[in-house]
Image (cartoon, rainbow, N blue to C red; front, side, top):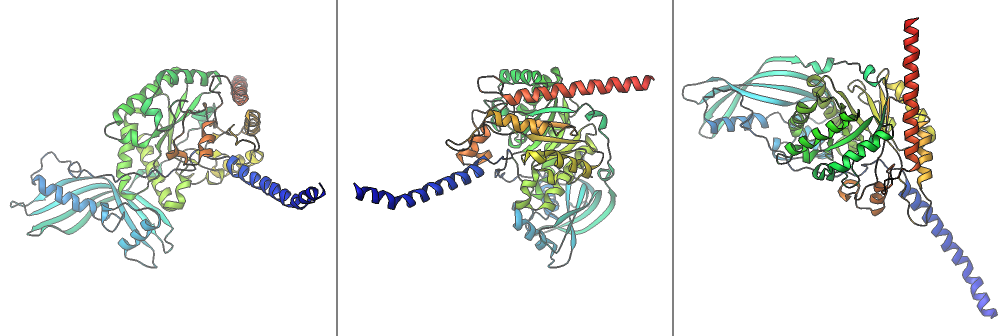
Length: 514
């Protein structure tokens, strides 16, 4: 018996060490697993190469040059002065490879220089010899100039211009050869002088939700489009005093030639339902597309025009969120290239669809003031320490001046790993209450999200099972349809905001009458 007790005593320190190590490991795992995560911290969905239709760039209706020659000349023109790679459109590059390629094209090592790409290019015959062997081609385009610096990680937007050029070609036995280029017109594009004020639109404040149906999240939303569930969800949102929804237009579904017409029909139906319920919609255009390849920018503008050309005037459309959390793409693509893309796309929308607010949803407050001279409003996401929520909001408001500020994602999951610290429903509600109590200066808040989801694909949030589990359980509404405490918090916040707004309007009216 005494030997047994001695054996136990000898093993006790080892046992305690193992237990303490286990507790430490559990605490570490808890911190890693339960740390609030932005909804798309994981996105590595790369696109296939987008082809250029060389025939469509010819705009003249009276073309004398044979079709095969037009296509050959168009290919030469479209591949020239394109810094996407040394071989033009033949290769898609990302990250450091793109920067290196830019410098190869520019043929510099340590000096700064400027490089251009051209979008919305159209060609027409300006002059053609009788033997069809010499031709001058007029090209009109939007020219975008980039400054390339000695630091390969820095690429900055230098200017946007409307440009017209004459390009001269002659034909040899080896094929067509370009032997001259002359710029005949180059004027600054009006994008750069755009300045709008949306104070009136945001004076009422937006109480919002990020929205997917429970049965069809992310990619499945538009493919499956469960209309009865969507109708019921919009009614539930309205009962929570919600007046706005942020939705995500999955790029590959809305850009695919085979599905984009169906996608627009579904979006039209969704917007009609929202209008019937007095709900405004913020459209996130380029969802699930972390791609900034320079040779695709023209296609990106065409994508914008296809969607907004038909729906920009819809009364339920509040505005456009260009890209969800583009600052998460800085590491792979570089800040300069990402911000240049955002600027060009924003200026295009502002020029062509002047009724729409344009923004982008930065992943954290510290980036919210980026491009504040470009975007109409500042929007960012809040998954940081709720105790300093108000401090961050005030700093953003000070940084962006008079422009409206919205927090387009905030919330927390109720999922927790077994036997570790619990993120339960009461904690979700407490966190939201803490945040909303500091949100009085915001022009809008959008909670992530209305529902728990039946399924979250690993292509969206990654392969780790606990990340998928987290994303399934951010909802304000339980799977059985009952409200979680956080839903009551949002409902009360919306009711209070509406009441305060009514009192403010009455006070303003009385002051005006006196």
